Amino acid sequence: PYATDAALLLAKRAVEAGDLAEAEKQLRWVLDNGAPDETEHLVRTRLARVLAAQKKPDAALAELDQVKDASLAPLVDEIRGDIHLAKGDLARAAAAYKAADAALAGRDEARPLLALKLAEVGLEPAPRKSDEAAAAEKGAL
Image (cartoon, rainbow, N blue to C red; front, top):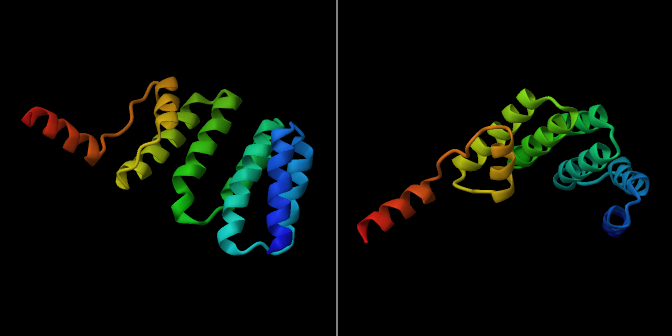
């Protein structure tokens, strides 16, 4: 586990330094050397972001296709939307952002950055139970 943690830290530092090739190398090392399942899926999302930043959208989408952890579905959909938006495919970006938002709405979670991305493609966030409760409370005052 220490080697995995070290590689993840090296990948983070490489991204911060703008060395995306090194970040990719470290993340692939983690995947190739038996990352635990719960770590593997998160590493794949990070690798997808690195690949997208390297202008490798198809490779990034392929990594996202391998993420099977349902708890990461909103994150995966949001990253997928970012990749499609970068490719200029607004329809697919909108669909991915909408899927991410729907999953988060089901959990009554909000991500302000996702709301901005939805607005960028002409959509509004789905209502949240907490929003409705806040509106009802405000109306009662």
